[in-house]
Image 1 (tube, rainbow over the protein chains, first blue to last red):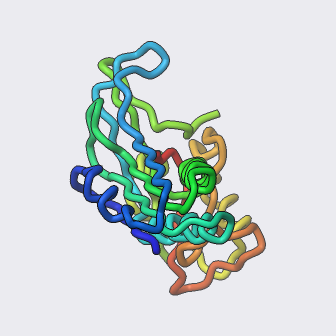
Image 2 (image 1 turned 45 degrees about the vertical axis):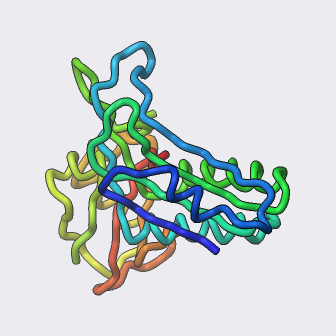
Length: 138
Length: 76
């Protein structure tokens, strides 16, 4: 079972955990990516996330399905924010439920690592003295 | 036909979409876009998506396809 979402409004952790909990899943692994207040020594004012939504959802579904095929996991949830976020805000939540912890940890790491490589979402870091699209330039 | 632009590409092109010729390969489309917008060459790379899937260089872009320019992604 999967739950994939791009959201323009605040992500909340507890409903994601509630969705994942069940008696058959003895291991629930959660990754929460938040906005850091500093990048390379510079103070971050805000991040602006933009997504190619239809493709982002389909790429996130692919990741969840691949993870379900690779590891014995029961449920995978991937929620990602768009819009303007400030330090401390939640940008991404990934929850994996499995019978045992190894599969949950492995699938969760796979999901976030792959998301960062393939899902068409972009973030612009805005500092006090400038701004930059992350990873855009060599 | 129209090509969708996101992130830094949207800023380079000055809008969320740009008109291009159809019935050319993805590689030819990338070359043509670089010629039209030289700042694209300053990117680490950019991919083309056709109908919501990453497309290889030999894929032919046809009228009616949804085509998008995908600069280096940075979600998470």
